[in-house]
Length: 74
Image 1 (spheres, one colour):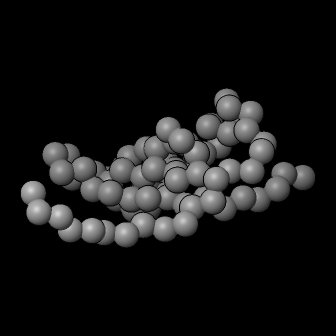
Image 2 (cartoon, rainbow, N blue to C red):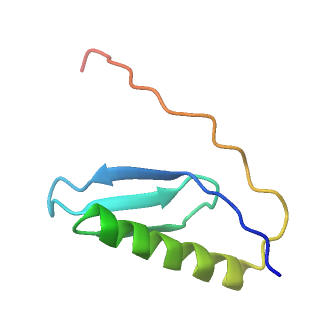
């Protein structure tokens, strides 16, 4: 039986296409996109499964701590 794991997905909207881009915080380089949230969730699950099957990663992933916004004069 396979062990269930939980991952953190950071979602941003691409300013040019308007599509949603999801990046898995614990898996460097694991990201995908879709036009809506249900599609993004489906695509992210597929991306995670593919990433793990190709990478062979079984060691603990980094722990996602959080995000924050900061303003600076530009």
